[in-house]
Image: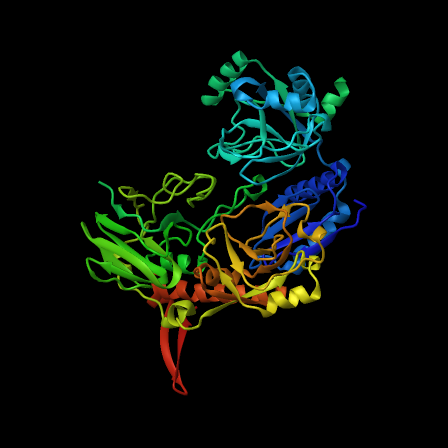
Length: 248
Length: 350
């Protein structure tokens, strides 16, 4: 992979591989490529990695692996990693019931953006959103790719409780709340799918570097999927990004 | 009826913790686990447990527990005012407890966090590979939360006969300094500079390394917030970074210039520049810091930090030999005097 990078110590138990310093899908794909390369060729002593927008934190046990040795491994991995070699990213389809009690701020977003609610829904459910990284709370995806036409500022007074599954807009960002938490995002809908379940393997339905697509559903469909999800019978649809491109 | 401890009073913040929840930071799950891993591991060794068994982490003011059944316990970490049936409960030592015994752990006299191990470990469900409580995520530990009055904590079956551990103690040299030397009132944390020390001027870095900070009351398992000399960013544009992964012990400097040291329950990613990272061997020391305590930073190299960690691991290894059930068969503990100083020596037969 022909890009400049630097490896910096992040304490005695982590190295930070910095691949650049901007938020772009191309750079994030390189982070993903390196991460996948490390997953395919695990290094003894590496505990885990944290993917971010344009860097990868590699956590290791210095009692098992010398930092200098790890640095050499990482340099070699950077040299041999080729984005073409890794599998295509996947798209996970998240059904969302927009508006009503489940999306109390849809009206506001629609008024603020001077669009019909249906247009807001259409614009929000059109793109494949790149999951740049997961963080903040377990399973919270930092998504990129929202249409700026539906950008809406945060609430002035954050709500004390936003229910898990809520889909919101904050400025030019959009995201899903994986667990009940306070928050100031404009909530436009909710998914009946448990995107995070600590007792499931894997606990979160998606991972950094892949994509999410929102699919509008009716209140009836929400109920049905909700019942299925409760007993673990609902399976989200996931496909390769290139498959979709082939069909278009 | 299995052995269990009944929580008569929970104390300030008592949670079940183990060595941590690894492998899930990529989805935003903090590692959690005992903040003072040294004291935590020694507590387990004292009662003959696997070193990763679940213990209680006790904060500042401990719980009162009623024993149902019989067990062997050990209390390590901070020096507490602690009693067993109103008699002094010795710390850093394995102690037998019986039906209806009352364990009372009152205020911490030196340090902030204690570790109560029980032979067999606290038997709570494993969640994502760990028994540690993640308070923010409401998972792990006892029902995903700190202990409350009336909780019944079941004890696992000890793999070995626990009574043979009763009375075991560790050489005084192996009790961390924060417990013995109460008047040593500045906690020196050794740090590796970076990964974003280039967001600060030379002068700001010097200020950071040369001044003394106070631990504020807004300090918890997520992170310690410090107050003191402001650490200035090069410019306003340098008060934020594009969010990246946060290692344990990272010293973040937000816009107000006051350091925040990120700990086991902290966010996995964040957007504040990290001037330095506390070396792993000093995290136990920090975990024993209380609001009002003073902290200073000292920059060391990666090699030095790894050496310190190896040294700590060597100490644990020696304790494993001393505390193993057949210790007498594998290692002999000798105390020798040289120039009026005492040294503990273990002779291992191979």
